[in-house]
Image 1: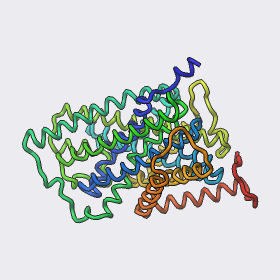
Image 2: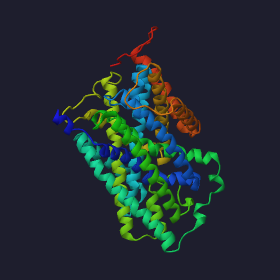
Image 3: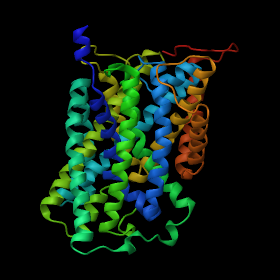
Image 4: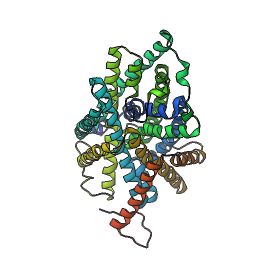
Length: 441
């Protein structure tokens, strides 16, 4: 019993895993894209999406307490509530959305490294591929090693972000370079449309907290502790996001960024002639941040595919499990290969938008799973307050964001859903009787 307790993860460490995924993806890679789309109104988008993320975090906290011993987060909750068909569709989309997220974050890593070395952005893809396979090896060493490494990386990158905010404040107020015009919104950035477009990117940034849900059984204190870690990670990241967006605008106008800007903080520092040592520190911090986010994404996606294999919804080969290291090595390898291939599918905004469809879809299905468990009187130790109003707000909000997604990303997402329905019945065989749970492999 003592050895089992020693292998558990603390709430701060679990929170760090969530922050590792959230902060690295949103701030260092996609904050510039959000500013390019909505200007200073990106602040509204960050707070709006943060509010919805808190609602979903509360739902996942309850779902985690209902099913504390599963590894697949939203997939496992949907599978437990509705059975194999919706579980299979949700699980595969969930998995692919996070594999795609690894690609988007890795592009950010490659861009920062290219900038730091003074190389052209043409080298960023190569660096991204190297990162993916290095982190795959790290994850293969075991869950505890990956989580402990992530905890240290989160501390370093938060310190770097604080240094960046301090410099931005000094630049604007100490050196007298404050330009309120930086906060102006262009004609193409005003209105609900640009805020909605920026919100799609920001949803990608907040999605990291679901990592904690895959670790519920590994956290000291169980589901209640996991719920706390989820809320802590969302609220802390919201504060950090708002501070960094303001800092970026204190240094440069939103016109300095574009939809392909994967290294916004480096762009802002270059434009404001920041000291070389600060650029170096932030560049290294960005590399650490994006690597940290990728670690969390690998951890999450491999455990999701492991749970799918355990439930017989993907080939057993992918669900093969190393008990000693607490990982699925084949799932990690498959994740690395797919993530590397996705790097060639478009710029960081395109890749992130495709990933977001999967994130929103799983949020939606998780909300329905919560309602289903309440309906059948299956509850856990943690309960969402103001039920059913908060879940209803979450469902309406997610549907609204899905409706506002870029048409290309929405088309890809809907095509994936249809394809998975066809695959499910082709492999499993259609039966007239009501199938609750069945094994495909």
